[in-house]
Image (cartoon, rainbow, N blue to C red):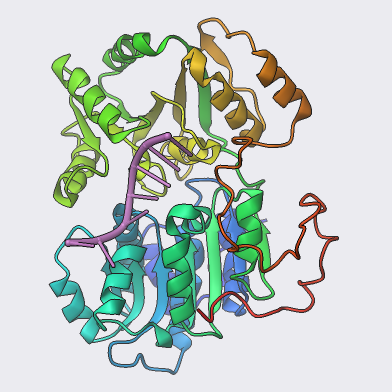
Length: 438
DNA sequence: AAAAAAC
């Protein structure tokens, strides 16, 4: 059965904008999310990479704001969208602007790494939708350049990362500043169980839309793994890249230094390569992505700054030159290819010391990645035990456990069995206040 | 343990 955007409850103006932007039929995450959001529900939306999550929250948000009789206050904003990297914020804003051409709504994006003055000036006039990275937003809050109290919609893109250690502090502060009776929307392709629990405290009577199990990789990505020593990886990658001179590749490394070093080696060997990581200026970062997009380079070597959300059409290969420490990052990295129905290839290079990481990734995505070359290293006794036991991912010491009491509010002391699904506590029925009142 | 995110 064919569902179109019109039947999802969007108005004619927006339908025209959707068509003008080249969208024909809504994706499953859009079909399921849009009516719920228009209905005013809080939402947890989980869907594979490249299936249109931005429009899944952006379109109903715009529709709602168009119907909203309230005018934004001076310096105020109606809706706040947060994302973990500057590039992703800018991309979201760009997508939204595409839908707003025929409307009076204003989108403003604020990120670090660029002058703050223009952002202050724009915000002084108020905005309907504000897209931001957390650090710069809080800077603007401290300068009294933005009033979040008028924001009655909060969206967290890449929600599991926004709720993880590196962002949670800023996020809590921001959530305490937006309107208490807001509508909250969380979206991601991954949602680890521990983070999901924390996420619930930001939601009020939420609907959950899960198009496929969280962590599942996109269908059109063909995955493989090569086993080889760390020192053999560079030559291997060079051979691969030289065999596909017309393809567009993204190569992920574990560290900024490693990414820079690898990019130089590739460039010395005649590959048109660039790099992107947090040690580069924003200008350099933007140029690197633009370079890949416009064909000045074929290969972009990156850290996880480029792992999530970034949409570069035409990326045919994603190489995991080093496997990520956190299994979820693998799902996002390879999700830079095979977007919007395209096909793509994900190639992992696994050194013997990375085998445990590989097994964690396979456990998360629910498949064994086909071995394309090299010998499968023998499983150590410790790994054997861990795999048989199943259960815990990550370090036994609990490196990713949220610190302090940040998630203690929900589960009562003791927290006996975290695996008991729904049975444990009745907080669904009795929605205690969300985490928001600072 | 690394990366990201403010100056």
